[in-house]
Length: 352
Image (cartoon, rainbow, N blue to C red):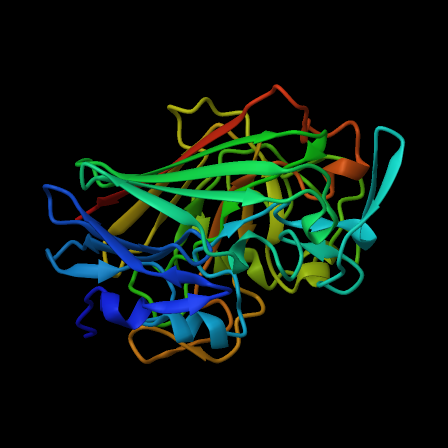
């Protein structure tokens, strides 16, 4: 059994591009604890009680800032932006002007490019020991995106064992925007085996199919009769290795599910029988992106165990991939004078 504790704040003291990094922690009345860092405005740990009353760290990550800087997987727990997920060929046209972004995923731009929000040190403010706000001003042209974008992401830990994440952004020039948190979850504890036996429920009737470059083909497909049908809860492994083209393209699940649930109804639910820990996801976003850690390799995590393939899964709440090149997809354009707002809740519970 792994004895989970939060990382030490001193191991997150560093200087990146002239800005100091820190580890910040929140604790609620039930004993749940979370740790965050201003490097990437990211979730580092979440200690939640299992069915035996033990605290289990359910988020993959590292025990020092150096771990994040050295990691092959750069997005653990991070705020991904300006545009999370993929933009085909790193190109899009907006108001008649063509924009070119860095290609860091084959020919695609992924998660805002190599210098995206996950690589930035954000300013921070702690409120009443239950909420942390991170702030970042992205200059016009950063990673190829237009407009100076002012972004705020807040993390609140409630006494109901919820992590409430809220995004807010404004721009001085018309731009495109898609933000998410990229936490990898293992409800049996980070480093404690893979997540193939987790039971997943996604009450979505449609998903976004992709091509071989993992770019949407511009349609919504019904999940019925496919490996993407999670409308009835099932183990991730049940259809993970099915002979379906969509799974081959992504080497597993790496797809967006269409979300029509209101914010007070779970858009996805996961459960691990071993620990008894459950996770409900509530969101205002039109999509929930399921990624099953298909490309996790051998980064060594907080518990000293390697994160191997399927060692964690993501439920990234977001707009659809490559939306700037698909005008029929939900809107990702932000104009001056408008305010982008988005809310996601990760709620943890126990089933005995």
